[in-house]
Image (cartoon, rainbow over all chains, first blue to last red; front, side, top):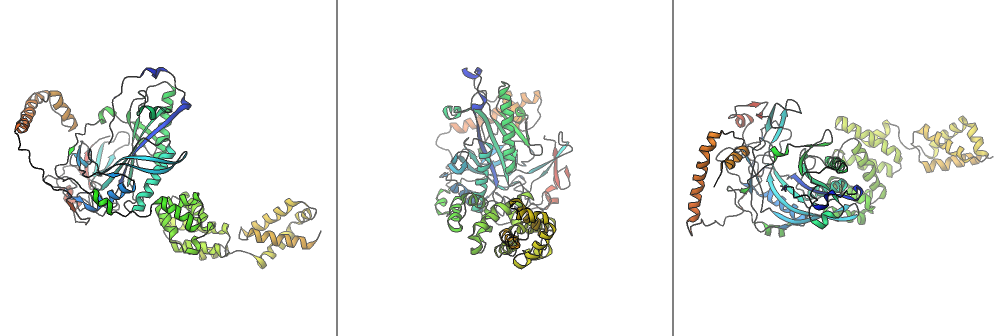
Length: 509
Length: 89
């Protein structure tokens, strides 16, 4: 919900050219998240619709048929209260639902049941890692509403012929979280969203892996540095854009970055920026102008007469919040000896943090394991567009143990991991790490096993051997390289160095 | 007082096309209805007692709904299990 104010008269200094390097970006977000309840907000239809055909999770209530009455899902209210509490909000003594009227096929009733002037909670905050250290982002309000239906535009993307409507999504409980315009860069916006997502998942009220479970609208403008702080609003000729339809975490940063470039170019050309609604086109990474005059709505909000108000402030005192990301980060540093960076990465995703907490204690308390998860595993997963939930916990423990026991080198471990992840992606299952080590012949060559390979290399490279003897140290590295090549990295570098040095030196000059 | 312009605006919001003649017909009707409310407002001391009824909830338990065929039974336009609506983009 946002109020687009009219353009006030042009202020007197608008003709003075502003130095673009002395501008700052002002960003506020509106985030809609689906609450992970079993049933919809106002009826008993199941929310588990993603694998099913259209209009198979509907009833007279969520289809908006005449004569039906909505009834509030208690769990959805409890979840929303948890969020409000975790975001340090003030819960209103009495809140109520309201009708937001607009005519569009995603709403079968002709209105959306949402909250307006008496939302569930107001005035909270969430601390994030900002551009210059820790930063407090103020939350304006948290309210509940029902998700509209899903539209499919048929017959060409530019000018569709008609629209298909699926009401499975209609009535799914949403929580809308609105921030103050406290964010100053796309990166901060992304960090805020990551932190928010982690918090919601730690609370157990939201499942980020469900498609379409998050949608973001972003308000963004570029202001002369300090102007916004001083005036409490944007400059008249620096209207803000409200970018709608951002449906992924990556999309937010992309949409904002595009919008900054567009607005900066307009400012450089001396154009006046009107406040406008824009639409993010994910596939092209651009925002396009909405037909704002036509889209501009008069929602005619009024209290929902079919629902009684909520008086739930006292419930909030009884809610015991679970360990949230910041607390877990501190614990990981203390309990497992994490570096702050690795702790932030691993606890920044609830599933990854759980994965780590469930490792056997002796494996968990290890900087090597922390690095393996935070850098190697997450990197390889990200590269393949996979999630930590795709990784069998037991297999990973086995792999880490193989490395720990020196059965394979770290480098071979990466090779095994890659092979297993590729199998998982292809077939949904994979062999055991020990089988993979065998198949790829990656068991570490060491001690006795090393000598034949070294002898072979020395026999093949007489020139390098005599160069070493005459004191050229590069020759040593060359010979090491040859052994590595023959053994495909299966040898422990320290061990190899030692044995190679001994072998060469025992030959004498 | 509701003006013809107000009625036109409301019709636009509801996506209902109305003619100039209808505007002339509907505007006084709107006003007649609103006058009834003015009448109600003028009565003293009879504003309905707001019932102290809050927190009406149901449990988060799945209840079977309609089949897709039932859901679509009343719609004149459908395609592949979807409701079919005019172009909106």
